[in-house]
Image 1 (cartoon, one colour):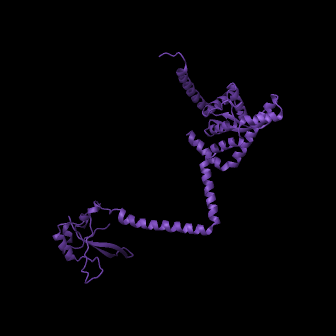
Image 2 (tube, each protein chain N blue to C red):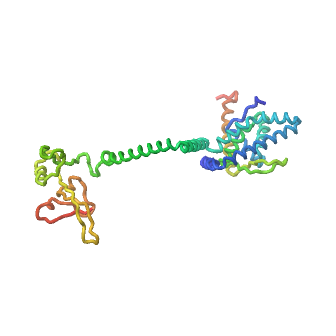
Image 3 (tube, rainbow over the protein chains, first blue to last red):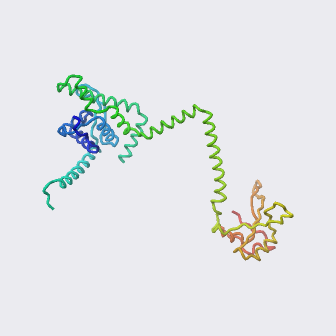
Length: 113
Length: 230
């Protein structure tokens, strides 16, 4: 398990926002699980990275939180995307697509100039 | 804007520190339990399920520490703690406190006093154009007759001689301070005035904003009294 890289800061917030967009309101554990699954279990999300990131997003107004009750009757804090969060997600997705596209061009073999 | 909002929330959070910590603890506990349940469901025995979940999630205390750094304003909180500690210590040693406070009071007081004098005398220039070229001329009497008297009132005749034989200054004007009594409008009032020679204002290069200053004719004998009121 230890050889799985932690999620690096900066990308985690996009992943959280995207997860909340596709899944709707979700608790911290759900978010972590979903991110790990989506990454094909290549990433590992622990407390130390997830909760500070959630807090930061909430302080910036991109997500909102609320105590609720989970499927198996456990009290849990649920996070949901706000309107500002939706916009931020769009913006960040665009930026990431651009960045990865540029990098891909550099790294792709056989590119002749 | 977002940054500002975040800082405001962090500031407000300073006052709900305990609730904040409690909620985070609850949230992490809930996270852990959910993880254990999932592990159980996937067929681990309870001990193993718990162990794996704990390994996976990393240090709880470290997570709380990270969270705290972000949720409040750490440097502000530590400063506050230091201040509180300092005050407590001062209260515990009243003697030391008294000496320290007294030292500060005297120090600040003396500094303020000295600065006020220096500011008025040395730093603030005279409120006239070209103050560096203004001189006060006085008369030092013969020390045999007036031992220790450095300044003497200049007699009008001396003034006239100095004015007429002057090669050093552009102009010389005379001033003598007078205490006057203002009557005719209810309560008489004491006002400070000065008797001056006609060129007084032109030496200082200040001009009245309304009316006129003195002209050369004004200080000739038999012209009657002319006054400039400010």
